[in-house]
Image 1 (tube, rainbow, N blue to C red):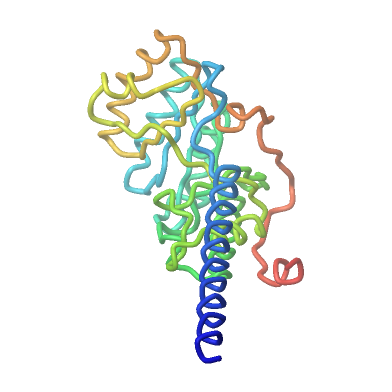
Image 2: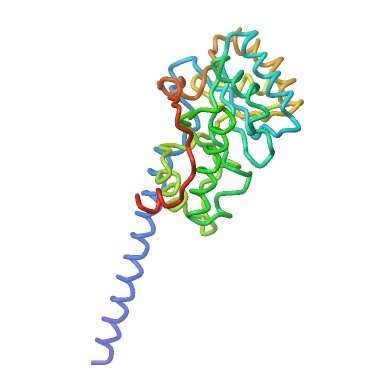
Length: 259
């Protein structure tokens, strides 16, 4: 009788173990599918359109944002800028610069309030980082600019446990359907950069001298190779973001009531 009970106990333990393994495998598969749909690293590989993106945009480096916009005007292309707030550049005194970005046909996307990893924020901290960013942008421009894209700091979408579900849920709860990452990050070797760029590529740069100097060399090469640098919205087939008169003001309760 004891041996029979032992066999049943062993079988039960095995079934519990098997169930845990299957559950983990399903969760991994589900997370993989979630990320594949949510995390954008490139656009249509059959189209020559590509997106040049510029992150951070520190106040001390504002001259390079200006130079990047001048490059856009010179070559008839567009870029997408992902500025932070805490650097002090998203302020009313720099309204003319940011308006010139939009007047050149470029786009502005969110890089959150500060360059703090999403894993270092709790759920409501993530919502706040996005909401306070939009509030600062609207105050800077003097009108509402409906931001469509988020680039999470470091391109990271995992929390401390290595899970993406909570981070993605917070981002979608706020209102973004996707996070924009990249598939090309090369700012030193022109040949390597050209070898890595494909149709639909999203290129990562930052507002600093080294990157702007590199773009001055890279853009003519990209155009000569037949690539068409456009905004992230155009890369994915969207019209430019909408604007409105009413400035956005971050209110946590708005999102608490939606949850």
